[in-house]
Image (cartoon, rainbow, N blue to C red):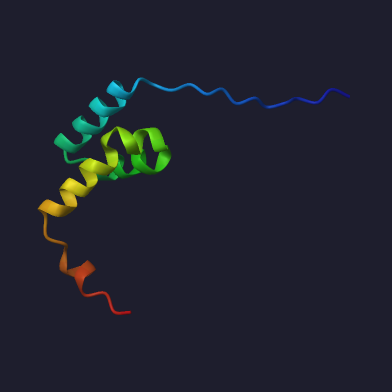
Length: 71
């Protein structure tokens, strides 16, 4: 019996490219995709995904549906 072994390769895109993707997503106000990038890998998060999300959150007012959450 042969057993298949799954191997994982560690392929990373250059940080500059990840930064450009994050900047473009922020420019397009595609914050759902930007959030998914941030949680998908620490490299995306460090390349500007989190910084752009925090910048957006700091520049907008939260919707009333989020402000009026009862504990």
